[in-house]
Amino acid sequence: NIMANKWFTKSLALGLAGLALSGCGAKQESSNGGSSESKKEFTLYSNKSEIQEALTAYAKEWGEKNGVTVNIKTCSGSCKISDQLKTEFTAGTAPDVFVIEGQAGYDMWKDSIQPLKGDWIDKTEFEFKQGNDVYGFPVSVEGYGLAYNKDILTKAGIDPSTLTSFEAVQKAMDTLESKKSELGLSTVVATATKEGETWIMGIHDFGAYLSSGLPNGDRSVTEQVLKGEMDKTRLDNYANWVELLFNHTEKKLLTVGTQEDMDSAFASGKAAFLHQGNWKDPNLKQLNANFEMGFIPYQTLGKDKNADGLFIGAPSYYVVNKDTKALEYINKFFNDLADTKEGQDYIVNKANMISPFSNTTEKPSAPLSRFLAEWISAKKPVYSFDNPYFMPDNFLMNKLGPIYGQYAQGQIDKAKFEELITNQIKEVPSLLKK
Image (cartoon, rainbow, N blue to C red; front, side, top):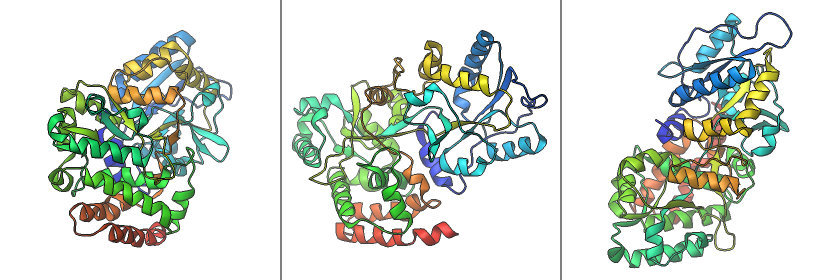
């Protein structure tokens, strides 16, 4: 369950408006009632069942060391944490710390949470902000680019660190294409467009149109799209990138393949590049992929502008109840997660997450996650991961996704692809009003 489609398929499918945090009802004691003085107890409500054991153990250890009782509640299963939280708030037993997933979660809870301060803020660029105020502590980060098999690239005489321009990537893919039989490749790129996999291009790849080349947190292109407008030059360059990927993906895989087919082609050394993110680490491990791998940035900006960033962001954040009586201890809990050896060990080794903090020396063992962790500590460029989540419900998957499929099947040409995308984007303002 680690990262797979939990974030990308599920919450995408739910879309912004209905972005509900999955959760279950659990009875819990109020940890913020009573007196106005500081209270040495707080409750944290999490939505990641896969880290429950590790988080509970860490909270117990930290609590004993600091003389604070930390109650961990975890929501998992089919009920919604948003519904559960509403019940708790109404009953006056609200948790001190709980989880939101981005803007939609903030919009839902903004009247109940408070801005945060702490040394940890200077050590990350993944905090959740509104204006100049920080409201969310990033639980972990995920990210993507075009994943590569370093062994294959090396055999073909290609250094992945040089793939920083459209021309360089085009040349590398042409080289790989010409050496397919000697390298044992069935495809240069592994990607898919069929129904059921439309999130791969419709969300991830279109995310590059929204974010590439812009500072992390820059919403300018997204804001333009939300008004129903496309930048023609940016779209032309982006469409050239899509054409490049499709030209170098084996036709059957591209048109009727599944993400499992993509994973196995990459894991078995039959594909040089995989169009996915670090949530694929567990799948690739299961498929015994034991080669060095990493990510190159998507080159969607055209021939005169190199893209040098990967798409990295926090899927969820801890926020703090404005009525908590334990703020002093919660702040220490957050700072210690970022700063102490134990906090870093919990995030990386016990919970198997990528740390959002650039000062973390612990690195994940899984290869794609490790590559992203090293990218973050080297403070290399990052493009916003969450711009797609400002779009209307299911729009990217269900409205844009199928257009990639038509293009992949040769039903439309590149000019028609651009025209259909542009026409769909014109509908965005009316869809947002619904």
